[in-house]
Image (cartoon, rainbow, N blue to C red):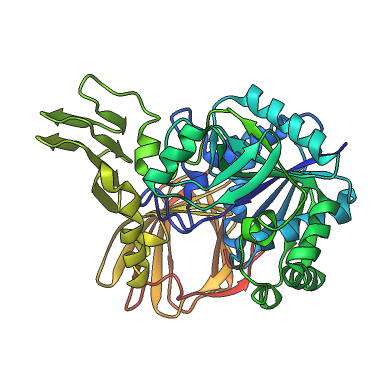
Length: 473
């Protein structure tokens, strides 16, 4: 039996703003042990008996960051595959693409385990046992969902009414009074969003219940590009064709319609960490009910607050209670804990205004390394640029800005117009506007530079790329 854990990694990053952003969503948030949600999902699947590779469906813009996350924890060098979406079309399209890929590469009998990238599961042995039960049902021709036994009248989850492994019905997120009734009845489970099935069965059920989605994805894959190498397979979905795929959730498209659904009730320490309140509850509380993570926080006459600071700024709180305070280098959130679900309104407003704070952090990850905006103002911007050993930026040119580079560690191989030179520590170079240029790190240590941009327009879209092995990076 081949098992292919299939991780769905995406999301807008709205509910945990400002720590999560559109291009740094919740799966990439690191927890107290240093691992991200995404790394935990990868390891959760990789450790299961029968796993032959881990497949991830994600946005094309998140590929390099995702691959870096996996590389850091994939000590066994388990093969990894990626399906790269140009835009999000909801989970039915993602599952269809994954199932078509698995059926083609591993056969229709291969087992798929659908895992959201941003959930937390604390009891991994119980999870492994639940997966084994699900596989046994799936081998009997069932599509299996995982139902979490509720311990509270939660209004933020969908529910499954069940009798043993039999699913009576799926229920949308209820009001509090109804959620209390569900809890007291003992007949309802939280819908975890995790599923297990054979590739062949889910394709047959999708053909029966949402054939237009399956056929649109099939057409898209036929026009898409596949690359392989070094234990990694990438299926980059064709943008024009994928945009034509109907947008629908797998729950609505298949699970609520199929007659082949079973459920595995389980208690696995599961949470989808859907708000700052839920994330804050993972931290230990002091005697006043305060939970503090990150840098230095000084509290006086303060109670029942969750405070997280990213960076080295001091956070002070005096005479407040029941607040969420999240401090990042470029954005500060202050919210009542009872309004944690409404944080997404700030994200939505920033996106409507096209403000960078909805999309990116001040430190931005690229396939070649990172850059951090240190300061900017009229006609200037200062960045710290770090380039990985052996990596290089694209050969490029800017119309509206010149750049000054100072190497502070490592060495830089710099193409500047028609010349190519090695720039060492404590040396600098000047790139005039209109010059083709490229920087590469020929060494075995990270290259760190300070870049000062000067010009009448400093936007990231003032760039012409001539040669880019990463593609728009």
